[in-house]
Image (cartoon, rainbow, N blue to C red; front, side, top):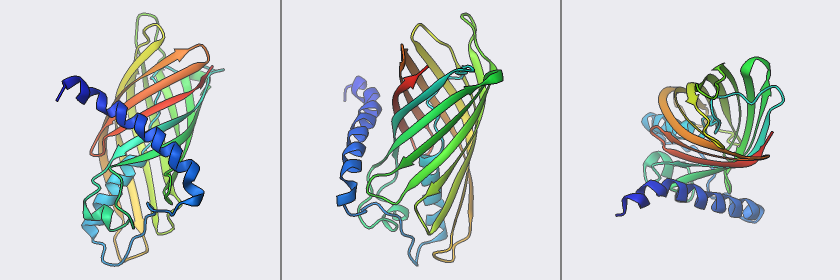
Length: 251
């Protein structure tokens, strides 16, 4: 296989997932909810643990933003897609979905971030998996400890939260903390970071114990700014690899 093809495949997956998500989203009212989650009797505790971990990491907050702050008047709003790779053939997925789970969960999102004083940014995100009862809302607060200059990078810490919506049987929330660094080069600002995600999951559908899971994630990305337009791409490395892309307005 061509090494260049291997490197570009995550971007291809994200692009194809964006098209797929848009098509499924437009057709959703006329389709069966083939990816609904339903936890049935017979689900094992080990399966609930693995399922909670993978779904939690797929729903964890992704900022798609450099460490540098937006500034007091800064605002960034856009649409994005995150494609998260899951173990579709494992029993903890096949037991909860009526149809064969997709290899990648494609989450189309609405995402907004606003700059505040003192190098602080806040953000909100909403997503709904097409043809499914899986949804999520979340938010972040980021503080740029170092705002960065023409010669030095920016450094920021972030706290985030997301919660699952739409699945009556399941309560799942994630809490995240990360540190990131970025340095602008002309119109492009590459960034990288590392953080921890804590997942809390419970269900009353069957007699299963609550799960509390901690996982490390690292991420790399870049933001391209062209006048009022902005584009961002990010790759997340964890037990659930994820590939994200956003297009929006930034000012």
